[in-house]
Image (cartoon, rainbow, N blue to C red; front, top):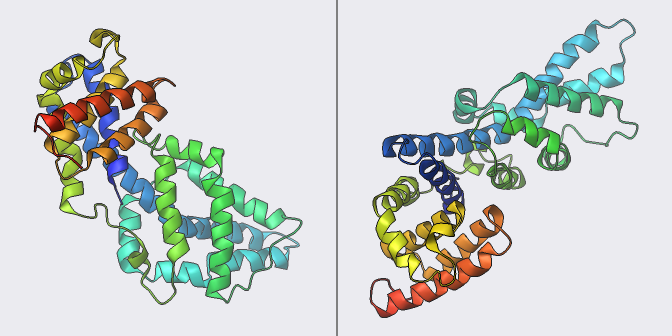
Length: 306
């Protein structure tokens, strides 16, 4: 689930703070922060994959209230019962492996509970409720996918609540949403729910990539800066913004120490980071610097050609 894009974002953020502290943050502390940040992303993934359970729990709480009301409305009670227990929720609850993971890792908060409760209220008060065959897995799945997209994935209010769960959750929330979307798109009532989820790391290389890249940039910072200085042209190396400097060092470190990654991929990945995290002009000169630098390093035999 944690891919190279997510890892690069987290390493960039940790390095930014590492250099901002000007030697007051130890390497061990930086590595711990990186581990905590990646763990937060995985916990968010499990939280999102368990949203049908969270909504079911919110419906069960509301059901207890509605059933105690004088003059209770049977239509509302029927809908709540369907939200509490339907083929999709039953499939997820039957997977003991996921339930254990969900109970151990999923984020919980009063704000999240209130948000799920608000969704229940909207469903109960909708003037045009969606017709759903609650006995049909496929029908419930399609209903859930629509609700997930509109009430969760596209909701700024929900994203704000997610961001409040951890200091490490910010720019990665949208990325993790796409992973959860793939889970909901691929659900099959003939498969264990966990079969749809990605493992935390797809392989050992991804697991070690983040700490290794972080360490290589820190250990070789002076050498990386020296290589880059020759290509800054009219930009004084000391005047390049901290974020641009880190982006360039990370890209160069990947080219030097990860020969299995094509330099074209490295350039594209870091151009995207520059576009998101730096100024409008940053991606332009980042592209020029890396292209010229990598061309010369290939000629010098210091990095491999694509």
